Each structure stands twice: as structure tokens, then as C-alpha cells.
Length: 79
Image 1 (spheres, helix red, strand yellow):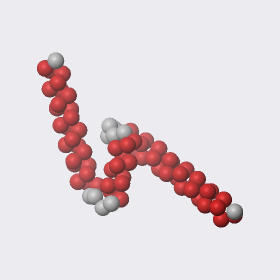
Image 2 (cartoon, helix red, strand yellow):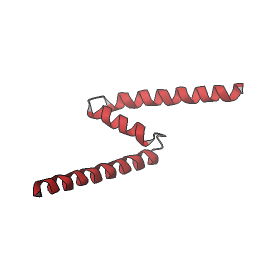
Image 3 (cartoon, rainbow, N blue to C red):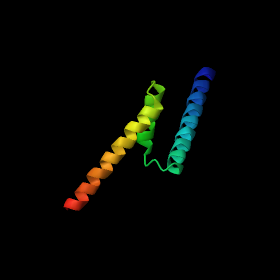
Image 4 (tube, rainbow, N blue to C red):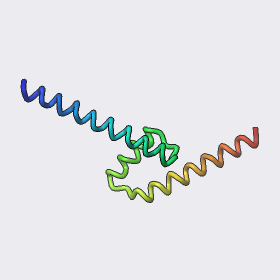
């Protein structure tokens, strides 16, 4: 039983650390005005953990955001 309660405590600690990291990451994202939500940030972190170049990922995201803004502007002018 002692080992199972230790495992439960370790899992709870890991979840607390993960939650703190996510909150910190989201706050940094807000300060930098990235416009990314928590789901998108989580995907970006996982991609970087898998070896994706963060600068290349940033460039791709910026291009997607520009394209999305252009599409939105085009929709607004045609409606």
C-alpha cells in the first residue's frame, strides 16, 4: 500500500507541475500577444519536444495567422 500511495502522490505532483507549466505558458503567450489558445500552445510544445525547430514552427504559425486574417478581411469586405 505504501508504494501505491507513493505512486498516487507522484502522479498528483506531476499533474500539479503540468498545470503550473500550462498556466505559465499561457500567461507568457498572453504577454507576448501570440493569440494562441492553450490547445494550440500544447501542440506547439509537444512538437518542439519531438524535435521540431521552434523558429520554423513560429514562422509557420505566423504565416497561418496572416492567411487567416486575410481570409477574414476578404469575408468582411464581400459581406
